[in-house]
Amino acid sequence: MRIGFGFDVHQLAENRPFILGGVKIESEKGILGHSDADVLLHAISDAVLGALALGDIGEHFPNTDKSIEGINSGLILSKCISLIEEKGYFVGNIDTCIVCEKPKVMPHAKAMRESIAHICKISIDDVSVKATTNEKMGFIGRGEGIVAYATVLLKKS
Image (cartoon, rainbow, N blue to C red; front, side, top):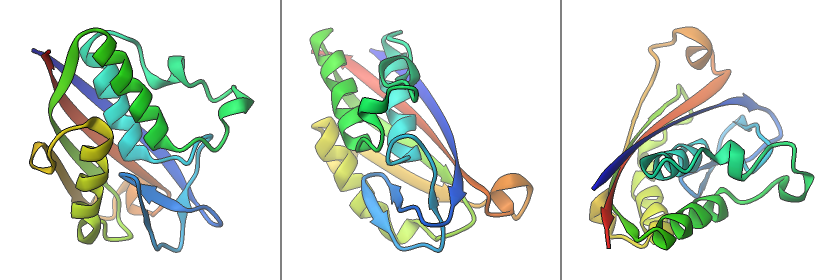
């Protein structure tokens, strides 16, 4: 077994979609980034890569590459899953935590879990999505950004 940890942070901005865990959520502000900026899928992707010491998504999907500008983060995670499968591993389970003030994301947790499970080829029962606020402190508390953390267990096929 191998364990990986992932972290990602993005700014929030107007006139951007708010896509989290592969789910579009209505919000006054969206998530800013080179891709669709799905901070949760990015954290999971980094955890998957990190578990096998395969670098990070910045190495595999650099934000200087114009050909992947606006890329769906589900595709990023899917490619990371393919990389670990090539090494003889599969995802055992995923535990995540999102930190933002708004919008409230927990009403969308089941849909996010379903999306993540589908991409990772695992059961929804093997995907945890939790969320909290930053108690109105710092850049998250001011509504300027969002953070996601992920821990992934990989098992040998």
